[in-house]
Length: 101
Image (cartoon, rainbow, N blue to C red; front, side, top):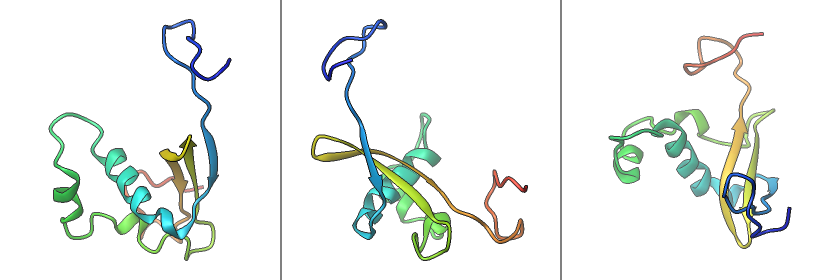
């Protein structure tokens, strides 16, 4: 499918490219964390959420831990999304949704 072509559900197809996270992506990763946490109606503004103590604790120091992995999705000249994961040393430190192997 070509960029801009309509798909069979009436949407427009675009090519999304990805690249590895860089330290200058920190602000965008914070925004995507906000979007992941507050995906539904009735959510606070980004500024309100960001002002809550500890809101970003799950992604603090991103890239400093072994195994921190993130991809940033791009369309044209701008970021459009992110996917990330972090290994936790144990269940005591892990956030809700932690999967133990």
